[in-house]
Image 1 (cartoon, rainbow, N blue to C red):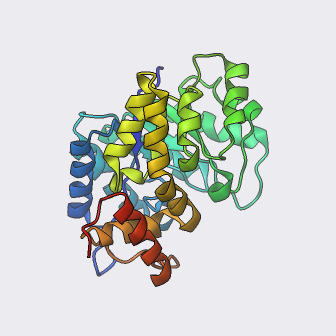
Image 2: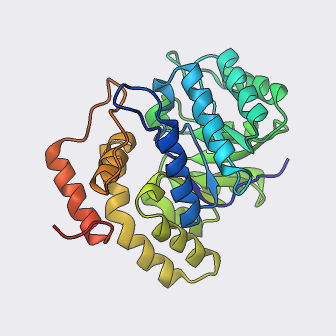
Length: 297
C-alpha cells in the first residue's frame, strides 16, 4: 500500500464543553478552520487530541466527527493506540469503518515491550484492517523508543507504510533511509526539527501548530517543496519560538491557551492535566503578538 499523506498533517485538539463532554460542534469548526487554511491532512487523536484521556466512546466520536467533516477533501490519519492489542485493533477497525485514510499506532506499555512483542502488536493490527498504518515513535510520551532497525522490521509488515519520528534526531531518519531505501515514507513529529526533517526528505510534518499559524506552516512546506531554502529558513525561524514553546510546555495546555488568547475557548483540560500557568500565558501572548495572530492590547 502507498502512503496517502504528504505535507502539513494537522493534529486537532479535542475540545470539551464546560461539563467535560467532548464538544463535537467546536471540533467541527476547528477542522473547518484548518481546511480553510490549506493543511494537507488531518490527524485526530494524537498527543494534542489527548487520546489517552478519552473513553472508547469519546475516541470513536472524535474520529467520526473529523473524518466525516473532512469528507475526503484531505486524507485522515486516526490515532488508535491503546495499552492492549485488543483495544488497538478495536479502534483501528472503527477508524476504517468510518472512512479514515490510515491509522497511527504508538506502542504503549507499562512494562517495556520486547521487539517481538512490538512486531506482534503491529501484525495483529495489520491483519485486522486493510488501510495503511503509520508507526509513531515518541519515547517521551509512549515510554518506548523504536530504533531504526526495529522500525525497518515493522515496515516489512504489508500495510505498515509510514513512520512518524518524534525523537528530534534527524540522523535516525537518515539511518532508516539507509535500511529501507529512498522510498521509505517518514514524517517529522518534532516541531523544532521541522526544517531539518523536511530538507532531509520527510514526506510531511505532523504538527498541532496549524491551530495558530497554519499559513506559516504551509508556507514552510511549500518553500521546501519548490527548493527555495532561503524562504524556508525565513519562515521556519519566524515560527520557531512558538514551536519551541508548545513542545516545552505541553501540547494540549499550550494549544488550548493559544486558542483562548485568540478568542476560542476549548473547555477544561481533562484532569490530571491543568491549564498553562498565568506567567507562561503571558510569554505565549508575546510570542503570538510577534507572529501577528493577536491584536495589540
